[in-house]
Structure formats: structure tokens, C-alpha cells
Amino acid sequence: MTDLAPDLAPAWRRTRPPRSLRHLDSAAAGRSSWAVLDAVTTHLRAEATRGGYVAALEAEPVLDRAREDVRTLLGWQPGEGVVAFVHSAEDALRQLLLRWPGDLPVAVAHPRGEYGPNLGVLRALGIGTLVVDGPHRWDPDAFAQALSRPAERPDLVHLTWLGSHSGTVQPLADVVAVCRAAGLPVVVDAAQAFGHLDTTAARDADVVYGTSRKWLAGPRGVGFVAVRGPLSQRCGPLEQAEATVAGRVGFAAALAEHVDLGPAAVHAGLAAVGAATRRLLADGLAGSWEVCEPLDEPSATVTLRPLQALDVAGLRADLVATDGIVTTAAGVERAPLEMTSPVLRVSGHLDTTAADVEALVTALLGRS
Image (cartoon, rainbow, N blue to C red; front, side, top):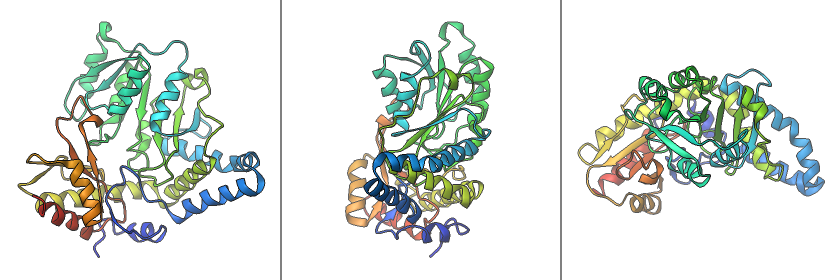
């Protein structure tokens, strides 16, 4: 067995239940560890034996530690700003805007590749959007030019750091610096970046939000929103008391594991997984599928575009049922202003092996 991240794969594999499928879908939902599962069930038992409110009160030190772990991963100072737990990344954006100081923003600027459900949240709240045009990989100069035009000046800028439809690592720090120089608040969707990239690059953003269930491999149904600076003192309360506290405790366990494993080592390991996966897919599928990212893109999200008309959603379902391989069919709704056709997303974690990717190559070639 050839591990694509040999330094960390044994530890990642040892600390969680064995796979029953070839799991190449961490960008959708990572596989939780025994520690996360134990944390969730221990809290649920405490709720059953001591009562939900007593158990929640007793869990507060664990959740406070998790809030500090979020701050550390963002490069913030201890106790800086507000870190609140919410139900998901999408819920984080909605709760933030509903509690925005004063009136709701009139217009939000964003890149063309913005995540579709985020646009849906803005639209549902009656907030207008302004597209900052430019290449797929953000151009800070394009942002500077767009934000310098008074007639098109937005109320805030929203940036999705790592897309749901692409493994391109965007130059977030450079674009945030441009927005800050323009005097505009910056809100960052780090759902695909948290636990995946070096998220200290978001230290100068006003708001960062993300989720538990993807690269951190925590429970589903838990997210966070972190707000710093004057905005943190002016927003309304972001955290809802009525929640699945066990999920938050599981998220805390996932954060602690990530910190203990070493974020820099995890980032390097995932980049190695992505690079090796792209090379194996590019070599094995030449002429039938296109690998969309540069082969050395430093992320573990790999995007495959079919070179002929194909029912990608149907293919994804068949890969699970017939070949035992889990991937994601990403439709154009994920980035409706940028995507022109569905893609197949491949996102292995630290325990991905060459055999996993080779099995996918064989399965796809058998259907071409």
C-alpha cells in the first residue's frame, strides 16, 4: 500500500474506524475519528444522566478551548473578537447578516466564482451583489480597480477562499489587504479551507466562518463564525443556545486533534495528496478527462472535467454502488456565474493511497 501522505497516513488511519468504501470525498464530509465519536457519545450520555442543561454547562470549558483553537488557527490573539458556534457555514453567513449592525448591506462584492448557496443567502435577504471580474485565480489588481470606482462601491466584500467547485487556492491575504486599504469590511467563507490550508492568511479579515464536517472531519450540523475588530462589538449575538451541543463537543475534539497533529504538517500532507492524485489521474485518464487545476496546486481538492457529454451525477452514484468509490458530482449551481458544465470532484484525505486513485482511474476508464 502506497500512502500519498506517508508521514501522517498511519496516524490518521489508526485513529478512526476502518473504511468500508474508498473515500475520496473529504471536501463534502470527512471521516470522524474515534476521539470525535467518543466525545459526542460521552456528551449525549451526560445529557441522559445529568440533564441537557447541566451537561451543556459542564461542556463550556471544552467549547471555550475550541474557540481558542479557532482563534489560533486564524492567527488571532487569545480572546480576540467573538467566536460563535452555529449550525453550518451557510447558517453562519445568514446569522451574521441578520445581526449586521444597522441596516442590512445594500450590495456585496464577490468574485465571479462565488459559491452558489452563498449567493442564495444574499438573494433571500434582498441583498444585491457586485461581481469583481477577473481570472479564475483572483487578481488583486482587479479588486483594487473595481473597489476604486465610487459608483460601484459595495458595503462589504465576500470571499470564498477555496471553492466547492475547484481546488484553486486563492491569494486571500493579498485580496484582503486590497479590501482593507479600500476601507471595506471583508467576510471570508473558509468552509473548504479550514483544516486544509494555512488559515492564518485570514488573520486580517473582519469575519471568517467555516464548518466542522469537511477537512477537520468533525460532526455534521456544526459550524463557526469568528468576528474581530469593531464589528465584533456591534453585531448582535451570533450563537443560538438551542443547538446540538454534542456536535459542538465533537467539533472541539476534531479541532484539538488537528492542533495536536500539527496544522503545518496537515497542510503539507494534504497538498502532497492533491499533487499525487492529480498526476495519477492526469496520466491515467488522458484523452477522456481533464484535470482542471495545475498539478502542483497546494490543495487536496482535485477537479475532473469530462471531455465528452456525461451524466456526472449518475456516474457518481454508480461509482458508489458498483465500485465502492465515493466522490462528489459538482453541478453548475455550486458556482453558477463561473461554471459551464458539471465536474467530478475528488478529495482524498491523509489516508488516501495510490490504490484508491488507481481504482478510480480504472472505474472511469471502464465507463468511457
